[in-house]
Image 1: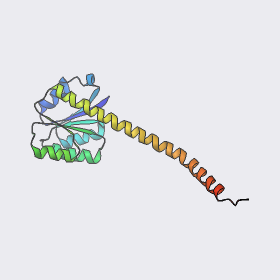
Image 2: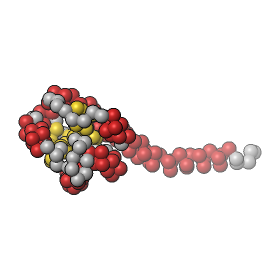
Image 3: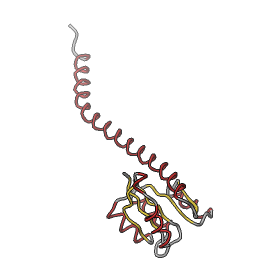
Image 4: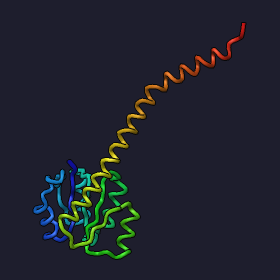
Length: 163
């Protein structure tokens, strides 16, 4: 199951997505909603979501600032932008911070879910790569003393005086 947070200053949008999309049907747990970036950062620290679905234009801290903070402090969180603004300035700034998914409002459940499916695959790939990397380092740590011992043994045998 993947944890999702929705960040949108428009209460109708935020609550509509939270209440009317059957998240569990898509293997997603809604772990919270926030109405701006400051509110979101506080809740992100508490709930540790895998995915943040955020608007761009919001009061107090906008979506671009939120994305900047998430990309700096929470590198494992995938970000999806859901915005009524498709202007190049917003899109390019979001992409600078690593956002790969930008959905324009209005949209429907089907569009959100199709992007979520791609994001979940990306998360799974990242998790599997981390698991393999950790396994590699464990094996390396276990084998390194044996390799050093074998190297030393070979050096001693090769450099021993011939009879």
